Amino acid sequence: MKLAKTLSKVVLISVSLLFLFSCDNKEDEPSQYVIEGVTLNINRADLIPGDTIRLSAFLQPYNKTVDEAVSWSEDLKDRVKWESDKSQVAIVDKNGVVVAKGVGSCKIRFILGTYAAECRVSVYSFDKQIPYGLWSVDGTEENYLFTFDDTGYRFTSADTCFFDWTFDGMRLDITNKGSEPGQSDKRMIITSVNASKIDFYYSSDNDRKTLVLKRIPMSYSQEELMFASTQKPGAGDTIVSVVDMGLPSGTMWAVCNLGAEGLDEDGVRYAWAETTTRQNYILENYKWYDSAPKKLCMTKYDDDTDLQLLAEDDPVSACLGDDWRTPTKADVQELFENCNIIYASYCGKEGFVIIPKNEYYNDRRLFMPFSLSSEYVNEQNPSHYSNINNKSGFFWTASRSEYDSFEAYSLCISKDDNNVKLYYGVGATKRFHALCIRPVYVEKN
Image (cartoon, rainbow, N blue to C red):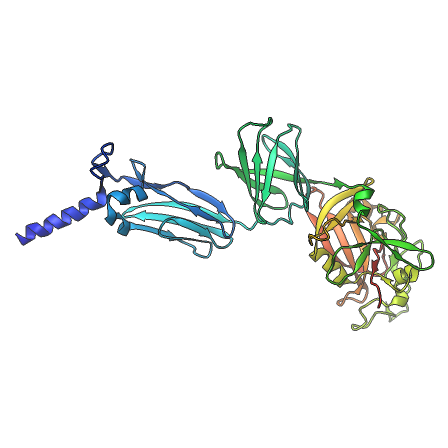
């Protein structure tokens, strides 16, 4: 008798794993459900850190949620399990609520007895700085122009589509309202942007797609570039326009290169630590080079502790006065760290427009034209000029290289041949080469 009771309990437990019984008051429900599998409402999710989604599990073949089934069979709660294989990427609680934690990919699994289903979660960190500027986007079905800048996101299309944009600091959502007002919405969710493409999917079909990007120079007028500039006195009757970019140091940058009358002009080129110009720039006629046999060294700024340009050798100070100088390597780094960079053009001259990240100064613009060094414009070296393709700019800093006394740092801007990647920063340049200079203004107390 005891054995019969024991076997009866085993059978009852086994049946409980396979059958869910409906309540008596649900006349439209079948009396029992045979579970043949489980599925999730979402099989793939692209999130950013902090995002939350709710996963729901369905019992097959009846397509009933586990929550519904629990109301008919309370003991089902003990058999449900949610888990994440990488908790540093995303976590999930007992109710299927997923919270994105860090960049990466993981699997969120729902388990019921011997049945399981999973959702692949990818967590991205969308970088707003990468797409800054104007882009031509060539897709298989659509051709777009996207504009990303501090004022928001603008859209241009030959098809005259209507778009809404939202940006939460990490992810860009675009809603396509169709070619006519009132058409059904199609939400385009961009999950990642890199130097050559946008990865996205439409919310209507969750189909992952890719658009190929190509940068286009954003054209600026003089009014746009000079809007927030102010004037500062130079030597004699000279007046120079500067832009306060809201930098922590308070340093102001001139709107034009040294010796230039317009924003699009190169200005006058100088060798490093020389205050006069000449026709040809080679090592042998560099002011601070000793070409005597057995020496072949620099006669000034040769010591490892002598790394900063003195006012007496600074062409900016010589031309504009004591409050003016050539920017240091630290000045350049401060500028780029606190600003966004856009590939732009002014009066047909291409270069970069620099815009402060500080929202109180984001009406300011600083245009840096592509201005080649004497190494490339020298008529004796025409091949260099064609190789560089005039898509680079070099400007002296006041900082000598700490590794090589024959070199000093320059502010460098350039772009690749495919109109995709932008490069900017500081790099070592031979001191005897002639470069343009962008003056900075630091008012002395």
